Length: 82
Length: 471
Image: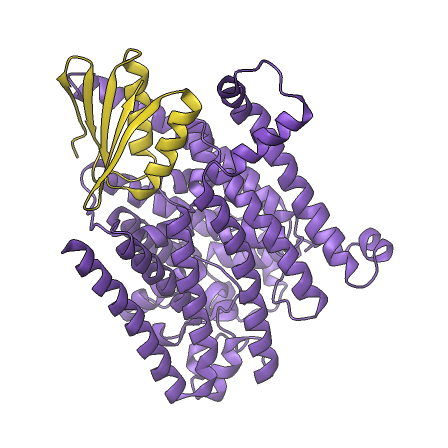
């Protein structure tokens, strides 16, 4: 199953992990943020509800800012600033 | 439109369970026992889904992401449940029974811990995630917990050679029917090893029962010493090793002082309110479940639903002891194994020639299996909650998820049988009931989860570097 990690524009990336269960969405999010530069933005799209809780706390613990949390149907979209 | 459809689904599922309950009660009043299991299952399912309450994430998210929410939630649930258990024990309505103590608990816990991380959910977590539409967990439950477990407890032949001679001799000396004991490694393991191990609850030890007479022994021994103190110490350990650093950074002060540290601990506990609140509610509900089943057993004058099945004319559902699997509390895995065995019997496999089904748990028809209905209740309760919050999405596994679901499910199945329980029956219930065995199993789960997290971290890095151009 393809995970999508794309550069949308300068300093903005998109990670699509829809269809993946725990712990993959949070692991991919963590690894993506580790690769990115401070100030860059990651848009994470996932549909595993419990990952949202973990990603939120992961960002709080690591000092990343969640700029936006959206829900489109059963999909969650988090915009995170590293 | 989507919201309206989900709302109709939620109402439809609830209505279906109400109708089912009335039908059972019309057929025979004894089925109120089974109906109680359905609705407690339903309540667990709703709470698990709302709280994102999965024991797999307790250690996994701690190691993989430095997130303590679920580990803290489990400890809170344990503390409240242990108080409930002590109250119920003190009024003589407890259905709790400790399990044989030994190293097998640690080993089983390691296997289970590996499995739950690979599958993406523990035993109860996998059930509630099926309710969210997650079919990877469905694969884990059907092939691992149902079929895998049933085969695991029944196979013999070459596997019998793995059993030490001493266990075999001890098993043969138990006087079990020859058709049961002659073939099957798990039978020899149970009768030759597990049954020889001691069972312990702290309240029943000489020291605790003589120092704290009457009901105090349950509150001091089982609740305070076996559960609340270790759970508090673990919360402190998690705070100081995982959470405190980021809390200090956020607070902007190099040292916090006693009040500040307490504030930090409280901040960690309330960081995920829905998980912590559900921890409290699950602990209380699990206690009420024991109370309800204990009350029904007293009302009907039985100690097991098998007694009621016999009165209703279904002796073929029960084991040689006249019992069926009826834990009397929240429990997963044995009922899934029964369902798997029931399916395999339909295909011609004799599943009555082993201790697990033939002597201990029976093989009731699924419609007369109270614990199986509890599992169905968990799935449907979670489905209702997921529908109400528009989080339901049918997700079929693709690619690697098939492998993780299958392998994880099998490991969970193999890791829950030698310990006579999973993250619920061998860990959560036992610790709160005063059985130190639960901590041994928990330690195993943490070790297994740690290994699986290391593997997944390596796998994820490798996959991202290999497949994702922008990475």
